[in-house]
Image (tube, rainbow, N blue to C red; front, top):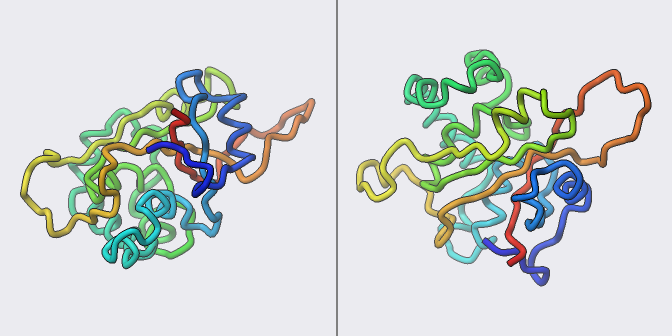
Length: 205
């Protein structure tokens, strides 16, 4: 998807991270503003759906998308764990996360949500993680430029009824781990930078 200033509002704070802390390959992208209401991960995909371009797209809410993602992840958990075994060290306890966070509306999404959303939407998702904490940051190492793809073949007819086809014409989405605020320059940094927001990255050309 391409950035269109007539319909997309840029996220100034996220743009700071893209230009100052993201790899060069992502700097020709513009972060699009998404409401930070706790559903920003799911709102990112709905934002790209055309915002009511079709009846089907407008009918899908962040709550429904979250619910479908929970079901998909729970039903095929072992498949996702095997596929993304390299991320094991940065994944929280699945049972605790689902019970306390994932199933609740407006709760911030985690890496678990990323594993299955590509299957639910039948698209590729590329995560972009800023190198604010330096080269040694394990989250940057494992998540920056990471491709999340559907478990099933994109062209298969199996289980198509359970998929939400809101992203018509879109075959991949770049999603940025960001923060609602720009990084504060503190001389004696005691805590690592942490993301608290997700936004989509759209190509400028």
